[in-house]
Length: 338
Ligand SMILES: Cc1cc2nc3c(=O)[nH]c(=O)nc-3n(C[C@H](O)[C@H](O)[C@H](O)COP(=O)(O)OP(=O)(O)OC[C@H]3O[C@@H](n4cnc5c(N)ncnc54)[C@H](O)[C@@H]3O)c2cc1C
Ligand code: SF4
Image (cartoon, rainbow, N blue to C red):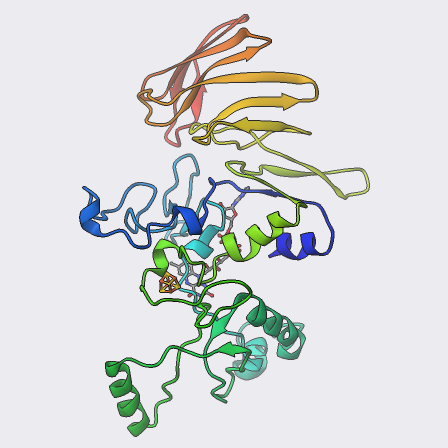
């Protein structure tokens, strides 16, 4: 959202994404039948919710250790791809109501927010109009209305639930989801295939990928770098952000570097060249090695090999002018030098 708003306001924006590229209008397998895959849709390490699921991520990400405080068991689901968890979410799009900002005043628990609903309402209105949300203005307490597209008509069993709920004096209203039921801002209306979790090829539901990032890219003011996990935001002597550091992890993904850097990738997303200042390094990538991931096996400057890497199931050795280093791996798959 920040990239969308800032680029439209005329700012140049750099967006670093730890995960890889993704375009739901091209990459989604929205209409693939289970029998078309030998896996029949079963999950993969990158897609715990099944191979057809849009979202690449999970509770355990290789190379990204996750710890719990003793006695706790909180698992944080993380997405690693352009659009993040908006490729995964349920699209339920509810506003906080006035009472949600005043918890302490109501029941003595927590704290009241320093702002109230009326401060945020104009921004909720803007987002409704921008992304398209269906629902009804139901006049329920603490559930403010909005600018809604019509909800889909209820199905037969939903009418029966509504009928029973009405008789029991239980509120039963249409959900509010960021799925567009009419053409909206150049996007096609939903055709109710029911496969939102796979990503929508017609762009009829909200994911930041094609509702925010794609329009931001169209302004020409957004630079998107994928497979680039920011490690640290550096600041100048006035305390203002001056850059970001990032580099590469075991999976050949960028995780830290310093200063201005230009990277080139091949069609498979492998890093093949890096330019820092006037120094150009080319990378020879082997994508059939035993680690199961593409790995850089040679670094070349001016056509001359500077470093060579040998892989088994993990990095075994690095060979350069200063000598050969041999590696083992710790429990988090970080190389340890011997
Ligand atoms: C199963 C599920 C269902 C959900 N359903 C709903 C729902 O119905 N309604 C609702 O309102 N919310 C829902 N949510 C929550 C909602 O998806 C998230 O709150 C929302 O997507 C958060 O957006 P975000 O941009 O803050 O973070 P994310 O969407 O997580 O995006 C963060 C991005 O930053 C990248 N990143 C992280 N660290 C770095 C780094 N160091 N350098 C570079 N890039 C980095 C990640 O790869 C990711 O792409 C759901 C979430 C899940 C998991
Ligand atoms: S938004 Fe509609 S058309 Fe798109 S995936 Fe969901 S149900 Fe299918």
